[in-house]
Length: 188
Image 1 (tube, rainbow, N blue to C red):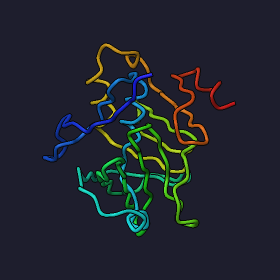
Image 2 (image 1 turned 135 degrees about the horizontal axis):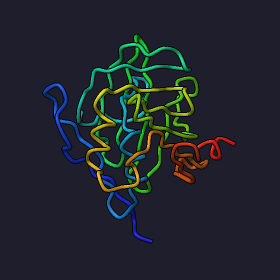
Image 3 (image 1 turned 180 degrees about the vertical axis):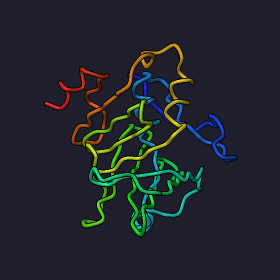
């Protein structure tokens, strides 16, 4: 089976800042989309767990924690070599999501235990431009991002879809995915 590699490539500009989107090489569209929409800003505590990397972009948007209403936040994407960190600065706190390239895995920094914990799931809802991790533990609202993802993939199975969800195994790798009404099956 071929290796899947993610590379960040320029894919547009938002508020004068070039956005970088992952291009999944040797993998499927959904795996690429999964990596794409999970790319979000991360916390300062996680920065202590790894050396400083190169900031790819910073985005001012809205985030929500534990299902609460969205509040202003800043997302910073940092290239750490074999992984990309997404630091979500929400008020005085930081939530960090890590996406590794080989193999593609996703984890969130646990501030209480000071270690990475594999994500259980992620979702993207195109109608609200919202990406959520672990249910509604951490959600990011981006008014342009998911629409640009859909526009960049005009001939794919995303057309006419509103909700895309993925479930991660205990190792943080995608083990199930769904669209729209079929996602109720994934939640069982």
